[in-house]
Length: 167
Image: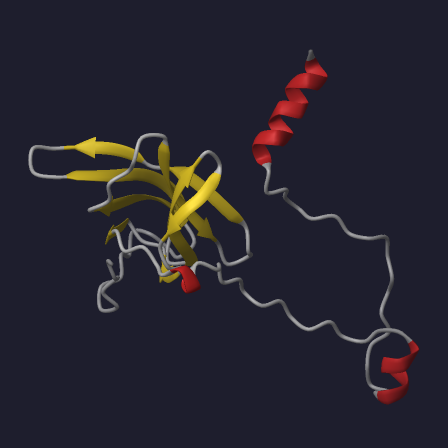
């Protein structure tokens, strides 16, 4: 696993700028019909999955992908082997700050570790009269219509539906 040297700060890239991160996985062998994916979750919980391409050299075989990430922002990632749409093997979920490269050797996790870890959400706070009665210094809560998320994780299905509307 690659780490970023905390003593070196790339002054040409402010934190948050987009950079191309090269992802590579070594020492993995796929069976016929299997695909290898790189799955990442950003700091907001948005999940993305990228298919990795096989790159053969005389000395080794590795799988690579190029991903646009926010420089020095925290992400969680793992590698998946998928057969017919079903995850057959996975690596453990790792936390890093995004840089220019992620390079690892394939280490599948044990069956008990297969479960994905999710970031915990903040606890819901009480609103309305109960909260105001307990804490008189609390600000009144303005209730609005249910807010919709700013993004949908299934971008491909959205694009397909837009094309269907045009036809």
